[in-house]
Length: 429
Ligand code: GUN
Ligand code: ZN
Image (cartoon, rainbow, N blue to C red; front, side):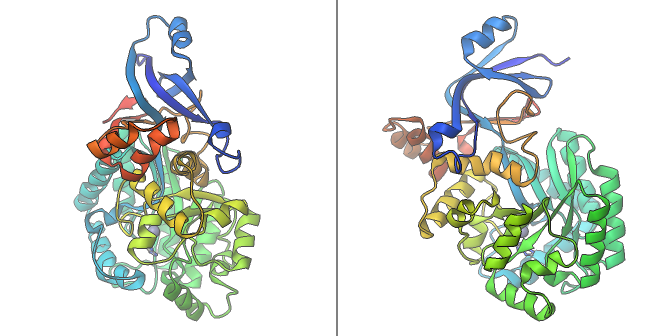
């Protein structure tokens, strides 16, 4: 039996989505302490009462630091760790010039293991405790990430990236091998410890109709797993999809036709959507994942957070490493704020934190397990120092309430703001 632990500090819990509840005050509760037991959260509440009920339990006091759920990154490509921030290209050129040559290397187990470990180290240092990652076409790349996550006790969603056209030699599978390899990985890993499998066609341009159909069939056989892919990221990409699928009504239809649209579908980007696509996505309850540092870095466009949230979409936040230019969900929240400003919406600090925790967890259908600090949730959490640099500290010193104190760290914070990280209750930073 692991020893119970009380963490004291400013503990934030969501009681509702700050997008629905009409503001932070109604959506977020502040507590004084959280009790960890056997990798889970046993209680949150007033420090004196929690202490009185368990006088033997040790207390770690984080003072006025903020204790939050660990960040959830709802869309990343761990194999792109070593080529993040590659200069000067837009999506299709960027894939061909930088991404595909790097992904080619992941057939080699030792390299996949090295990058998986590096990626988990870098993201943990940023306070990210769960992610949904694409791998490469190589089953070895999936095994490497799952083994590394399993050894760390970490909750991870991932899948073999499937591509059977418009990718170089050595980086294509087939409809049949994509089905067979995905099915084998799914059977071996889905639901093991904290691992879940996501069926992962990269995007319509790199899959034949036969491959999309095979993966749709696999999803129908395993309806409880997620399906992740890309949707409407750049205008050139959408034009290409129209050429490749001349009979499709729109980009989303290339997935829907093959059984790849329902709740549990997780679409990265979703920037340039047609009205029909928005309606269908909302009707079926599919998830949209906003990747703001990627969208500005690759020049993709401005996600309409205000409009899509008001229409009732299920939306999470993500880095899209390495099209995204940072591993940090703090940096990603700052970019989400800026992109929303350019679309006429000023996101509140509570909304940004929610998108990076409970919102991203809900987009991955994991919000009953991670993304909030409440009794019964898994004990993945991050402790934020709200005065981590002189520039942030002088700004935070002026704050007259919690949200004024938090916002400078959201906008200017980096891994120096991450004072402690726990995964399954165990301290990892
Ligand atoms: N669309 C298809 N593949 C990718 C990828 O690896 N990154 C991004 N940003 N978009 C994609
Ligand atoms: Zn992506």
